Structures are given as structure tokens and as C-alpha cells.
Image: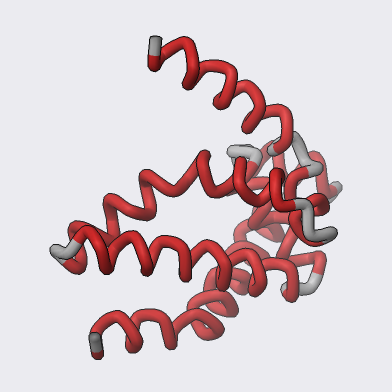
Length: 133
């Protein structure tokens, strides 16, 4: 029964994550954000529990991370935002991203590297907040 319920949810998530989910989230579409959260929350939560050893705190941190991450991704310049979305939301390889964006694989790697550094800098305060609690 649970497998049958999970299957339609996974299909709905995949349909929204086909490139429109981020735009929908930016427009304030709560359903799009909820589906994105549902697709990745378990992975984030597992990492948080492993790091914090406290499930209640890990749940709070998971929600904070999603809200802040989505906010920060939307503020990235398109040249950095698009490779991040294509890599982590769409699951494309560097080669596929290069083809979609019309650039070289090296350019994709460079843009992802800059985006990772920018996001790490902008979200670094989360690590300090969790450690101080």
C-alpha cells in the first residue's frame, strides 16, 4: 500500500522537477516547494541526524536548510544557478549540462565550483548556528 502511495508522489515530483519547479518556487508556488522538499528531505535529514545525534534538532535544521538554500540559489547569477539546478535537481552529467548550456565541460565545472563556493559562503552561518546549539 505504501509503495503504491509513494509511486504517484515520486511521479509528481519528477514532473515538477523537469525544469519548472524552481521557477514555480520563485513565484511562491507552495506545492512546488513542498514536492521539492519531499524529494530531498530524507537525505538531508539523515545527514543532520548523523551530524547532530538529535532527531528533533535535525528536523528543525532540515527545514532551515531548505528554506535558506532555495533563497540563496535564487539569488545566484544565472550562469551559476543553471548548472546547479541542472546538476542537482535534474541529475544531468557535466557533458549533458554543457550541451544544454552550449558551453564546454570545463566551463560547467568552473561554474559549479564558483556556485558551490558562493553557496558555502552564504550558508556558512548555518554550520555555526548548529554547532553553537
